[in-house]
Every structure is written in C-alpha cells, then in structure tokens.
Length: 101
Image (cartoon, rainbow, N blue to C red; front, side):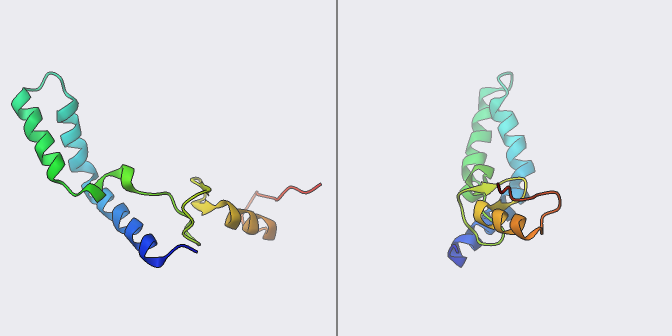
C-alpha cells in the first residue's frame, strides 16, 4: 500500500491538470505555431512557464485505484496487476478469468 500523502498528491495533480488543460492547450498551440509572431510566441512561453508545474498532464502518475501501487498498473482497469489478478480469480471482473492448466 502506497503512502496516503503520495496518493493525495497525485490526485491533486490530476485535478489541477484537468482544470488547466484548456488553457495549456491554447498556449501550446501558440508556441508550436510557426506562422505566429515571435513576440506572441515568446509571451505564450512565459505564460506557460508561469503556470503551475503540477498542472501538466505528464506529471500525473498512473496508480492502482485500490492500493495506490505506481507500477504494473493496467490503464484499462486502473488497477495494479496484483489486485487485477485477485479480482479476476474471484470472478468480480466481468468476462475475465484467471487461466489455470
């Protein structure tokens, strides 16, 4: 089980990234636009640098929703590999069955 503070920090990053997504997207579009004036692009770079770093989507870590484990997480289920296997063995995930031979 991951530390609660680490899990909460990641949730805070997710919320901030969701809030800033539109604004960051607009600024990034201006920065990447080669046809825009250099002054306008530079101003966009400064605004983007002034935004909170934790608002960037790349700072969000995929974690297991149940245990908070940061590695071995399946994106489709948002579960760690250990928890996914346990739930599949119990038959709690529809259509999934643990293989055994």
